[in-house]
Length: 153
Image (cartoon, rainbow, N blue to C red):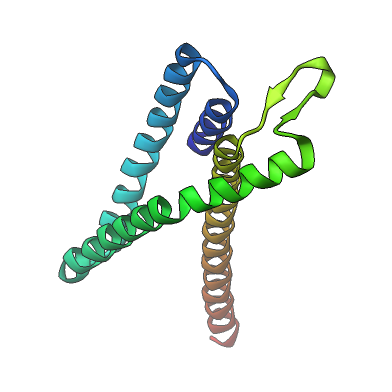
């Protein structure tokens, strides 16, 4: 749900050209990001022991800051590259269903960011489901071992 809010907000924000819808869409992104932030920290607190919690959070904050720095350093180059591709392939504008849409590099970069969010959410979901499947297999092995002990008794 919250990933959908972030994705919808990012895609919508990248597609609007006026301030009013952009403000509401940024609020939508904030709701989704805040929810994910709290959920992630809650999961870390529950699954990391007290002895390692400080180190894990330090590593998390360092990784977040590094990714933010990387995005700020690489983002303008990606935007400029996508802008030149947009101008070369579509003259910077497309008209699907009769609507003229400007597609500058900034807009394409934000759409790319939305796609990255979708891929990250899918990877996260897959990873969580793999953990559940592993737990189920371990539980089934334990039950099987108990049944074998009962049969031999």
